[in-house]
Length: 122
Image 1 (cartoon, rainbow, N blue to C red):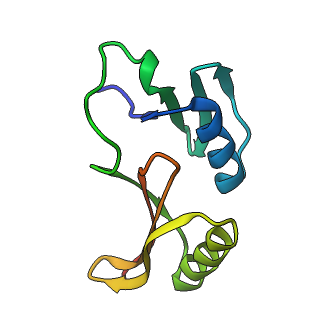
Image 2: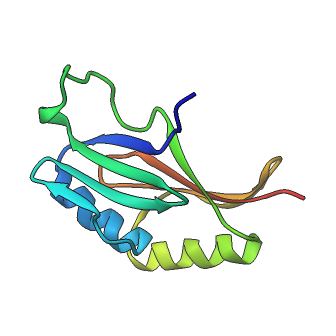
C-alpha cells in the first residue's frame, strides 16, 4: 500500500493561503509555483494548496466539508494554540471544548477549510 503523505486543499488564491499557513504553522514553503504551494506538516506529511481555477479536472466541492486535524500534547497546548491563533485573528468556528474524543477547537482558513486542534482523551 502507498504512503499517505500529501493532503491537498483547493483554495481561491494559493499565495494568500500560503502566507496564512506559513504564519499559522510556522513552517516554510518547501515547493512553490504561482498556483500550487507545498508546506510540511510533520512526520513526512505535506500540505498542498492548489488554486481552484487551476485544478484538473475542475472542482465543484466547496470548502468546509472535511477538516484537517492537528494533534497536540495536552489541554494546555489546545488553549495555548487557540490563544495564539486568535491573536493572529484566525476565524474560530468552535472555541475550546471538551468532547468525547478529547479537548478541541476548530479554526477556519481563508477559504473556510476546517482546522481542528485537539488533545486526545485519556
